Image (cartoon, rainbow, N blue to C red; front, side):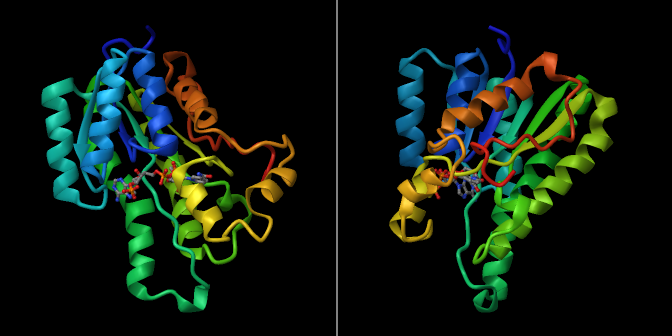
Length: 252
Ligand code: NAP
C-alpha cells in the first residue's frame, strides 16, 4: 500500500475522470476527500467505494467558493488528516462562438477552470510546505496544445492552468512538492457524452473521433488515473512542472 496514511483531495471526484482518480488513489490506500457539487452523486459513489473497503469521504463544495473551500479543507484536516495530495480536476467547458461570449460567461469559465485551482492550491499548499512533501496534479486539457474553435474561454482558462502549474513547480520544488498537469484528450466521461449528444464532436460523433485518433480508441478515465497515481508516487519526486499528455496521440 504505497499511499497508506496519505490524505488526498480530488475535486470533481464524483464523476468521470475525477471518479477514476478517486478510485485509483483509494485502492492504493489513500484516504480520499471527494469535493463535488451534487450531494446525491457524492453519496452514491462514496457508499459504493466504502462497500469495497475504501476510505473515501464526500463533501459538497463548489471550487469557486473560497470560504466554502476553506471550510471544507479544514474539515478534511480534522476528519482525515492534512491533505498531501491535491488533484484539481473539477472543470466545465463553455461552447460559444468567441464573439457571442458575455463577460459573465467569460468570468464563469475562468472561475471554475482556473480560479478554483488557485483557491485549492492556496488553501492546501501550506500543509504540504509544513510537511515537506506534497503532490499537486492539475487536470488541464489537450485543447491547450493547439486551441479549439468555440472553446476560447475554456482553452484560455486551461492554458492558464498549465502556466500556474509550471510556476508553482518552480516556487515549491524546494519544499518537496511537485506540481504537474495532465491534459486529457477525448476521454469517455459524462461530459464528453453530453458534448457528443449535442453534436459538439462534429457530425461523425464519437466513431469519427475514434477514426481520427492514432490509437483508434476513445480514452478511458482510468487512462488518466493511471498517470495521476504515477505522478503522486514518492518515486516521482524528480518530475515537476511537466505537461504529461494522455490523449491517444491526438493533439500532440
Ligand atoms: P465530468 O464527468 O462532467 O466530471 C466533472 C465533475 O466536476 C462533475 O461531477 C461536476 O459536477 C464537477 N464540477 C463541475 N464544476 C464544479 C465546481 N465548480 N466545483 C466542484 N465540482 C465541480 O467531466 P470529466 O470529463 O470527467 O472532466 C474532468 C476534467 O477533465 C475537467 O476539468 C475537464 O475540463 C477535463 N477534461 C476532460 C476531457 C474529456 O475528454 N472528458 C478532455 C479534456 C479535459 P456536475 O456534474 O454537477 O456539473
